[in-house]
Length: 226
Image 1 (cartoon, rainbow, N blue to C red):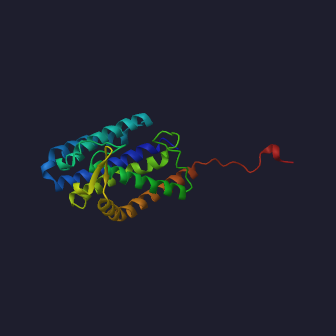
Image 2 (image 1 turned 90 degrees about the vertical axis):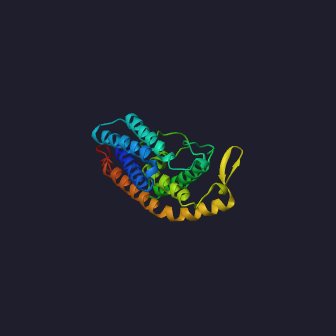
């Protein structure tokens, strides 16, 4: 895959992060400072990505800085009772992280399905390093969709569709109870279709870009001629 696709991926992700923070700012004036500070950080980072001829390594650094700023604002949006202070996983240790992890897993599976349907190898990524057993391309494809997962999870708790009593702790992991799982999946059915359309669009664009760079190999070399 081409590393040149990385800047577009990072820009798309940061743009969606900014849009979510702007919506959250309009809804939560009590969180104005962390939300405003994050926006002030994200905007110049996005401009740097747009203006620089970056390596994959430097792009990862800029994306990481944007994600860190975004998370500082995102955690401020949740009630203290949820215990959501930072991103954690394997296992997730609070209700918000439990929902983020499950949402990412389901979205990753959809990206994998879309990549295969488009004839792409889901293990060959261009932003995430290729690693044994990891569908790196699927990881790449969901990056611009991650802010949508974050926004959707916020709405789950903001609307009180999910509440602390829908979760339990099992061997150090925070997991959804039966009622919570039913409510989660019911709501996810509404989230998935637009996310899947976006992923299919990414796959079509990527497949088209790859086809345009395929070498025109002749059917027979000169030495094959009689």
